[in-house]
Image 1 (cartoon, rainbow, N blue to C red):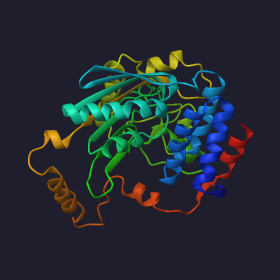
Image 2 (image 1 turned 90 degrees about the horizontal axis):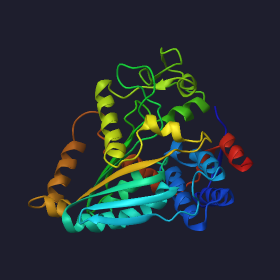
Image 3 (image 1 turned 45 degrees about the vertical axis):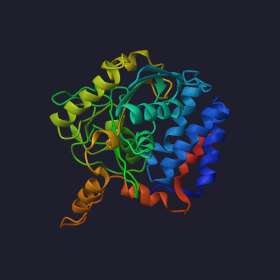
Image 4 (image 1 turned 180 degrees about the horizontal axis):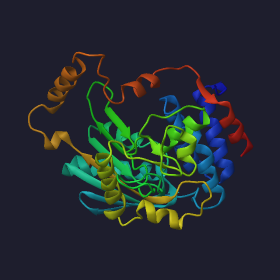
Length: 334
């Protein structure tokens, strides 16, 4: 069993902020990314919290990531926002993009943001949840470097290609889900390997193309599989087309060729969509949807958990979070 150390959220934030600052991020960038990382730990998303910090530091130290970037937002049409991340951290681009995207969607009903030249390896739910907090439905997706074999193949071609969705609720926390189109997110596989745990059958193949439940065999020379076979493979292809084909950014298999292999995230694009139920829906959409969620939650069985409930429950806890001791040693060594 891995050893852990209890840390308060303030301590986690300060560790992330100080580490990013020493690696070359200015105060603006370090504050935004440190907040994203501590919020992941707060909500129980350990594979997207401090676990990601060494990779960000690697990208900052190699100068691949611009730690002083300021995203540039261009209103191309009334419902289309283009965002140049200027080789900066994706959360910094979101900080500039989301207010403009929300304003456009509240006016036109539907708005899209295409984000270019940014480095994204954080959780995907923060941006869609931020959109939902303004009373809008949000969808986000992004690709990565190859780690997933399409259905019928045994060689990596797609990224883990996550999709996130959020739905606003007036008196409760939004419905939010964030899922890889891979059978398991790569970060979760890496955490399982670190902690000596197995992964479910169907997660991936080893370096000989054989099914395995050993996360180390998948992470080191093997490949992940899409969830649900050809269904997940089709959704993963959709993410590639939205984040690369539609934006003009690189597909996952192209991204690896231009990355410097410093261990940090690759540069790429992201697709964001915001929709206004207030403009689009007829009648009282809020009470209509609240009734739907109540019926769904009341179904017989072991209990239906609405997407995002566990994360929001974790968020309410003021207790210290348990952080892997080996990870903390690695961060301090940076």
